[in-house]
Image (cartoon, rainbow over all chains, first blue to last red; front, side, top):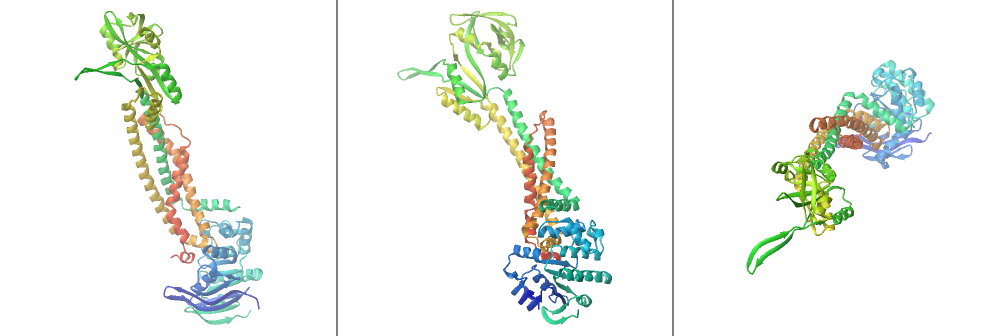
Length: 224
Length: 386
């Protein structure tokens, strides 16, 4: 079995009196595609934010890629994110005044040095070679999500996080995006954690965990 | 593309995206810095202009001899004070002026009486070249005198029925002085009752070679510097009196100081208003761009790196506002000085630094609060739009 890239022990997150994530023990092997399912407020996004270094746990331990995220400072977490994590958002969150290629270069800027040729290649890889200079407002939802994927993979992250990346897409675009992610994962061998409401989308992964009210209630391994 | 070029590119794109707000901020910064520049240039030009005007009033320091006084009395009776004329030594004054290093225009005067047709006439020996420089308001009907010539005060000329071209034979101490009247002087002051001749001629006629009764100095300094100059000279000339001509110098300097204070206060009010306006606009911008900031942080931007982008925007606005403010302010200053002082304002290049500094300071200070928000913003909450 591959070594665990993510390892949590009694990982907990409270927001005041509300316990969004109850003590969770989870191991994610390197290269695995883990789907996280559950109803709204079940703790899916909380788990993803904690694993991605966007939020800090209230208790427990959290090791990602051998790093103890609790020990990192605010800026240390930022550096962890830029080196280690790529994030695909449901709302895309593209910068509206930058073109597709510039949006990808933005991630390069925070990681190292913006390289337009490399950013173009990333967009060509996601099938947007003809939309390099278009701004987000000029792209369809599926195209915007592909820009978001190109931006997430440009720095060759070890961990790709998807927060309902197909939540705003129609079926055709969803299939296109998921196929693309599968293809990229097969090439790059990065680990994927994808939060979704959609059983069909979850089925693209190797394993699905189900959260309910902050508790891991079920785990399902998919047939490849 | 290197990181710096990308940062500039990003800043320019962000500013161009919000054209309306960018123009508004630029206008506020340019207005504030142009006002600071204009008032600064006007103030500086006004100072010089007033100094020039003050020059027209003549000397601002005078050196006079201490009067020798003698109490006259007998027993318990006091008959009063008798004073006899005393003089300054020209060489001593010249040495003291050289030693003091004072930058001053000077005129030496010797006053005395000469006898003419059974009457005593008060005469003054001067250097006419100095007089023309220091007392530009003297109006001469006729010509300025050359050697062997004199000018007569208007009142005296009327009283004695003298006119240009007449010749006078004046008697001094055992010596006769023959002078031709070259012109009649009119100054509106005591000069109108005097007769003027060349200083060496009078010194010789009175047997007072190298002696003076008065030295007028026009020091090119103002305020405290004038006071200090007087004190410095007094130390070098302990047996004479060095007095400030307070009236003109003090009044003009006082007025100038008040006008400058008023300008400073107006500028301060404008800068405070502009700073508030920048702060308000920048706060709105940061609020609107919460998701963008959250995204930058989520992508791995540290708090300082994200803040640098916003500081870059503020700095670029500040620099642009400063440049525009300098150009616009210089034009306003030119307009004010032409309209109010009927003179053209100086072109003062280093005021560009002040304009830039004011604009940059306002842009960064006004952005301070929003920057702190950028620094503190939580990426998860801001991406959720909270």
